[in-house]
Length: 252
Image 1 (cartoon, one colour):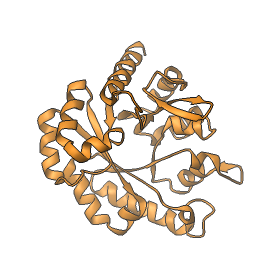
Image 2 (cartoon, rainbow, N blue to C red; image 1 turned 45 degrees about the vertical axis):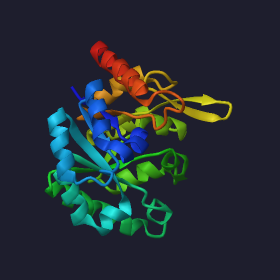
Image 3 (cartoon, one colour; image 1 turned 90 degrees about the vertical axis):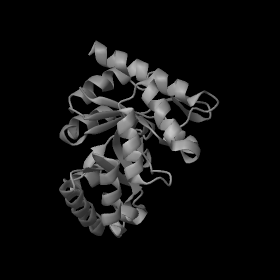
Image 4 (cartoon, helix red, strand yellow; image 1 turned 90 degrees about the horizontal axis):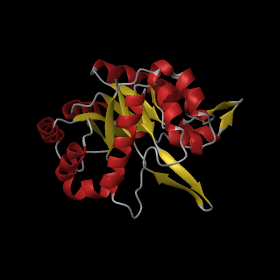
């Protein structure tokens, strides 16, 4: 059964002030791991020691495409020291996305980075947002083009952003079933002014149906990610997400 992780993105302001305090709170909530977006100025080896003491695993770390492409060895060294099994790269820029003038070169870079990451015992992932699902080229979304043209690249599907982008997350889970080791359940709800993020299971995302589809991908991790808690208590939101998802898994 896949383990469940908390993102640090929703807690980014708290992490900047007291990363270790945040990690302690996440461990107390009952999460198995955390997904980083940096170590907030802390040495990766020191963070690893604190994670081990708390019984937490560093699922992965988000880095920019240009950062890992330009500083590959440093990024791999830091994330290996942190204990990450995965590195998520994004933000390649319009020119490096499907249809862009540098797209072919970017594909070669993605493939090369996948091999270098694999050689260090980690897996490189691409995390989608809504935009890659809105734009199409010859009938295929940008996300499909990228995943089909870079077969070594794995996908970290953000199911909420897929729906917000107008796509069918069931389709992507089925098409890339063997390439989704980490899956984000980002719940949301549309309002008159757009959409707002919600704890997992408390929005409009079909979490039960997607949970069954996601299980067929045999993922290593689920990340319960909703970006913003607004005026609500962030840790309270994370606890709601975790309790809901654990019950969902128990129900099969």
